[in-house]
Length: 459
Image 1 (tube, one colour):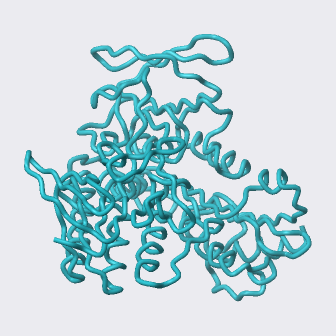
Image 2 (tube, helix red, strand yellow; image 1 turned 180 degrees about the horizontal axis):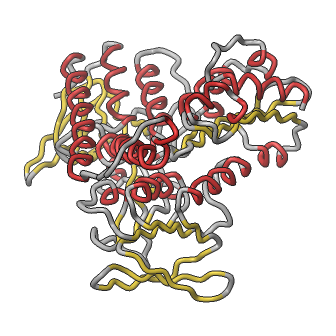
């Protein structure tokens, strides 16, 4: 059977590209090795982790802040199986939603491992049997997998990846998290709220290293108040598995130290998943960091084969992958699909959340750009006070000469939602004055962005 487009992978890049291409009139097939659609993000990543973050945050709020709201809740307990069931129900509902979109748009789905036979052929292998498909165009969207450290190999019990850390069958008494990035901080927060003693081991001098320094400092301060312990400038050496857990050996300030815990989560990042993809049969080879080289139109060295998402250059973010998938689908349909990488937001879904778009203050300084900074705290915002969500701030960085906004950084309970306004502003090359003069509903937390913009005008 010949298709106009065959996509290998049904994660955010793959399934979104398939739907868009079908809407634009292309005959599309998707090859997915898992029994369910949605990829890592839906099944073991973004969505299940956010479900657990929401559940654990409700519990933590009830424990520590209900009384201030005049709500008396005694003998609070955690029903972990019910919490996990809710997580699975959320995922299952979204799985069915993608299946519905495939049926509605006439997208053929093939279950099995997809690999390239040539520049126009894809082989689907499942249970010892195989089927070969023909395509005018092929889109590779196979995503990524957790990085495994040689000194800390995953065993699914004492040493786990994020895949297992979203599915513990009991609350660990203690948890070590290697890696102070988004995944480690989010899952560390979940289990800390539910009662685990959590320590985060980070090689760098600060957590959330990709964030603005002021934002990452504020986040660490907040998480420490919540009970998380941080060991920075710490190099992991090895681990010893024991009957009751694990002992992690590390180097800190030139001396060897050790940490004990029931479980150890390794969250040091993800790597592109291109295993057994048959790239060489189609005349392709991997580039730096195991990624597939593409041009500005996401074409590989073989023009009719495209690649997007975590297997190509750029941040490993679901929404970045979605945008690239849509852009490729539109280009194949004769439209001008494009992605503005300068306005892709980034979020850490802790409590408070940290969200940003554009340049950090340090990056602006490195570029030698004259700028003004405006900052405003949520403590001074009426809605934040009413919501009991006064932690954090918004910071706007604008070009001193043109007033064009260069970066926005938000630490707040709903920073992930607030950052969309900043991304839209920057997409249209907006200025701090544009934002400052935009009337915001009162009382809302979004007013903090407006006030930060006013401060940037005079900063």
